[in-house]
Image: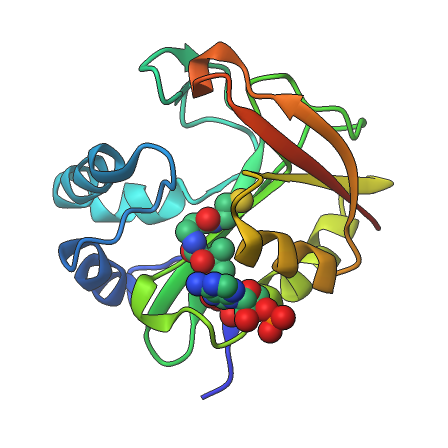
Amino acid sequence: MRLTLIKPDLEHLPSFVRALRRGWSPDNVRGDAAMSEALEAIEHDAAAFVEANDDRDARAGPVTLPDGTTAPRLPGFHRWLWDGRFCGVIGFRWQPGTPALPPHVLGHIGYAVVPWKRGRGYATRALALLLPEARLQNLPYVELTTDPENLPSQKVILANGGRLVARFRKPAAYGGAESLRFRIDL
Ligand SMILES: CC(C)(COP(=O)(O)OP(=O)(O)OC[C@H]1O[C@@H](n2cnc3c(N)ncnc32)[C@H](O)[C@@H]1OP(=O)(O)O)[C@@H](O)C(=O)NCCC(=O)NCCS
């Protein structure tokens, strides 16, 4: 089955839960902590969990950064990568009316593919499928950041028209390491 993006819902939730139980984390940086939080939130209120994946009014409250501090949430939404089963997640967040992002937000778009479905072109296709939705926010461009050693992610961005615009240091809350910022004109 060809890869599509789906809006998270209760029907597809069991496949997402199976990926979490298999050890996959929805947060590249926060790892197991984010995985456990997601499982707890689903157990507590599954409907609220799937609804919070489409949060264009930033109602879900502050976001937790890797050092445990919190910061204001931007409007945003997630889509699940789906090939008949859950295979990953892609998220988009933005500040209405401006392409600028606050320093604690490392890019408009982030994605992760479950380890057992990598190398099939899924992240490349997921980003291609998400860009038309990003265009609906009337932004002139989106920015994405990756670690310098994350070559698969850089290939995903370049394959979707991205260009490197800056090398920068991540904020202290993310550990301060060097990172790359790419831009895709919309
Ligand atoms: C980065 C990530 C999303 C890529 O997902 P994916 O579905 O495997 O990516 P694709 O299959 O679309 O591959 C993209 C490119 O990377 C290459 N690639 C994939 N895995 C690779 C690996 N382990 N080593 C080297 N290259 C790799 C592919 O060959 C492809 O290159 P090509 O276009 O020249 O053929 C996935 O590795 C992942 O989830 N990593 C952890 C989370 C993460 O780093 N997210 C991005 C944060 S910026």
